[in-house]
Length: 99
Image 1 (cartoon, rainbow, N blue to C red):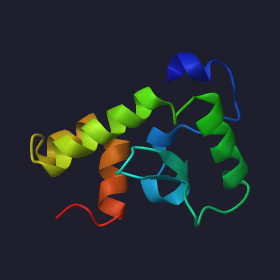
Image 2: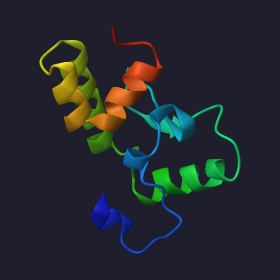
Image 3: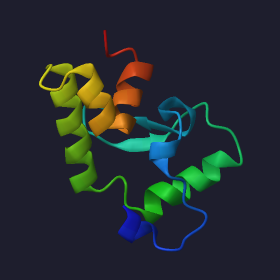
Image 4: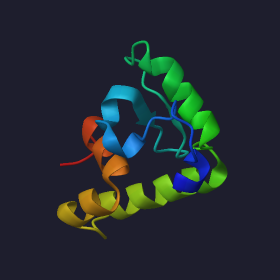
């Protein structure tokens, strides 16, 4: 993602935000979107971030689904899951999909 970000200052780093505040993940297909409760000015920046960083491409979707599966199935313990995939972990937690 850093290579995709380059010098674009209008890009939000999704790994530095609370998962539920700006982005959300559909765990059925792995897609990412702007969280329905996200307000301006974040909403516009979030859309640009998804587009510019290609966060919703097939590769990213597959990776999110894979990480979610590893977390939910217990292949990763909770500490490992949060450290390895903090964004996916946070979205799972925020959506009530973790114990």
